[in-house]
Length: 431
Ligand code: S3P
Image 1 (cartoon, rainbow, N blue to C red):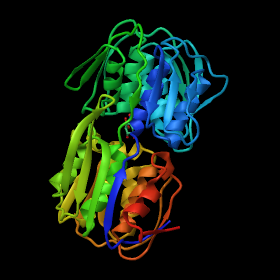
Image 2 (image 1 turned 60 degrees about the horizontal axis):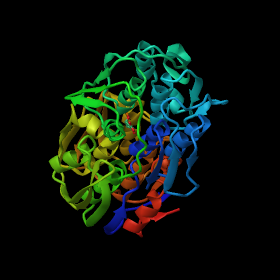
Image 3 (image 1 turned 180 degrees about the vertical axis):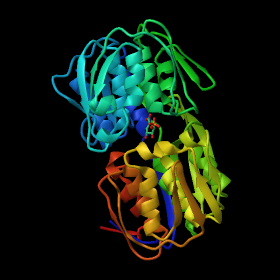
Image 4 (image 1 turned 135 degrees about the vertical axis):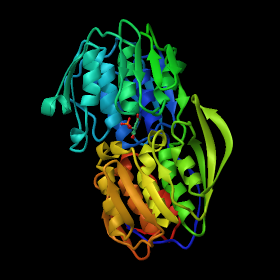
């Protein structure tokens, strides 16, 4: 796609459904009693990977191509079958790690694999705690990488302090904890997104939260729950940054999930001086939702660290872009996790914005940007990573001259991204 700077940006965008909640609504309902209708499920490659794997495990899922409504027939806690084939999780870390937790509680043999990116992402963080609970797991390269082989069975509850703030790790252990003989507690260094806790609680599981610790009790049953999935703040983020950084912009982002464990991007942009209004807060599917209005602002540098990092983990690449337009220095640290996402996002961000003329430097645990620096159009590729594809497109909208984005990845989370960009700024994109 070719992108150049639009004269103005005006849009009212219904934000696509949340990816994390879409995965969870399928996985948790698969092991519940009864049927559930999930409205507004995200029809993206990642969520389709979860649905495909669950179908392989014998879970009836009625989700026609192109539809935003999925019906799941719950099989109960012990009703899934052994798949007669390898489970392909595609590009999706959430699919692989949550299914590992689920399968740890079942006496079945499973092999999980994925694309080249997923096969290079760390799995020991899930393999070790699940082994400690009593499941048998092996992975490639000394039990660190997928493909992963798992044979579940009787599990012991445990108290586990995870070294990384990761909702995928936490969720895998909590899912296994539903099947354990005694209670299971996960303690995180910083709190990660809590969609698992909210949904399991609504389905009748016994979940207790104290500060950075979550405890789940062994479950006898979960009740299927129908829900409407709220909009994904990670998909609202490109428009938030475009509007905040463009000199003539106003965007209305409708139906965005504003769960406090996910709103780091709002807090960071506001700390930089962005004009963001949060209107009509309401609730959908046990999650808070609001409309966000973002307008042109002049930004200043900021520091992002500590508990803000997991609250904005997938948006940090876009913060780097905002920082190129901001006055002063922006430092993102404590974000080593960025290196093990769909790509090494520290390297990918520094390379992408560096090519466009940004004053950006890599740190072991993040990056440092000195602004403001004008960006110039460049030839960019998505590094096989949807978030980097969107970063490149939005950077192209803020740069002088033309940017070429070689996108092979945006559909992983946001199929309508390019269409929405065209709506926001008709003069900006050409194929
Ligand atoms: C996710 C958790 C985060 C996030 C990912 C989705 C989830 O990963 O980056 O896009 O749905 O639980 P980590 O748990 O590895 O931080």
